[in-house]
Length: 518
Ligand code: BES
Ligand code: ZN
Ligand code: ZN
Image 1 (cartoon, rainbow, N blue to C red):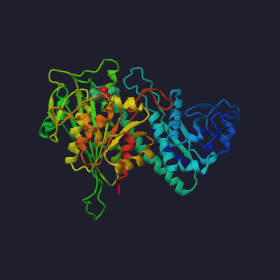
Image 2: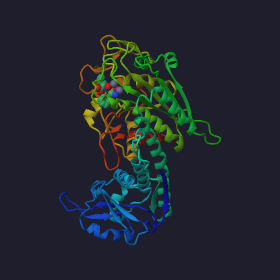
Image 3: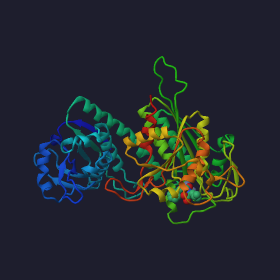
Image 4: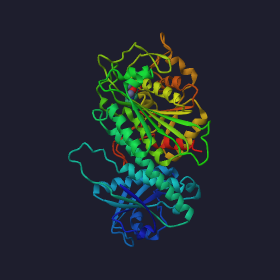
């Protein structure tokens, strides 16, 4: 999908379909909807007046209604999309509603469409403070490009329908505003392309996307974007003494892959690199299929476990965007990829393995494999000089039980690092909820015979137990752990997305990295 930004009056823009946003400005829970269009164009408001007055359209989030041949507009059709109540309005609603517009248009064979940049007409100053132009612009681009994807690449009767051009139309107002809109538009394009790259990886079945293939795709992306990339396998893991990672990998006929992607910021002329400059490490769980291993999972829903590399995909996606946004901070992306299989060579409950850090781990459950590969990934990242770590993983069912599918779990050993992350969330619109991993939980991973065990003594608080395990390997390095098990796969169809991979964490990780850019 080609995305364009034009500065002109939307009413005069020639297009087969023009979308415009509407909010419900009614106050009070039981009040009838009072619809206002977010445009300063009288022509658009007039064209939609009868429909709005009819009270057929309630303005709820993602609701769509179309007017054919709207009088006074150059557009052939006017699509009105609801943003919901003003009270709840934030940038994320704009992202979703832009997506809903695209998903209305695509199955109807629309190839060219435009969207009118939401204007402050009906909103108070207080509301507009929550809706800065740069973020609105980003949200339009991101929402549209996320929604445009359908996961039908493996269908032989695939309908070759796509929106070829998506144009954001905004009045040519103040120069500073125009610049903000332009910046948001460009950033949005970079970030959403990266997020879609990650989603496409997660969509791949595990017979296609083996650890080796994941390594190949990461390397191809890096070579295209000018990032350094090394892809290692069993030999290097043995050399590094990654006993935890190797334990998981050895049950499969597919060799593991350790991917190291490096972004180095360009040095300012005549300046030496600062010795105390942060180095950010992104570590992703890349289990291309999780059968559970010898502690085999039940058959029901097991097919979804191809998504168990979504953390790795998020890191590859983040590096994709970082390569283009060029923050002034060094970033190392690490992917720990293996297949978790039961076999004659598989690791077993009761085994004791030695991680790269030297810690011994007693295996209680081979299905707790994600933390095993991440243990060595986190430790390795530190040896590469990372001063700040983040990992993303579809790590525990317990996190899904705790938070459902709207918030991902966030764990950290450092409040300052979390503050950086909170700032990033405000830009990305993604939702994370912090859960504890304080030292008083450490008993959960105390082993009878080794330094630690890979699952908890009790099944309660399983997401925290997993985080406690990872914390053993992050040690004192400021670290964030994102448990994205509930958010990496959209289980429901929404007006703005189909079922399938969400690409969660790409946007926030990219913004988090940028908070360290000097
Ligand atoms: N990949 C799973 C996490 C998962 C489970 C995601 C269910 C979505 C739904 C992970 O490797 C796993 O199997 N975790 C176990 C840990 C347990 C054995 C301590 C779990 O959550 O059941
Ligand atoms: Zn598992
Ligand atoms: Zn897993």
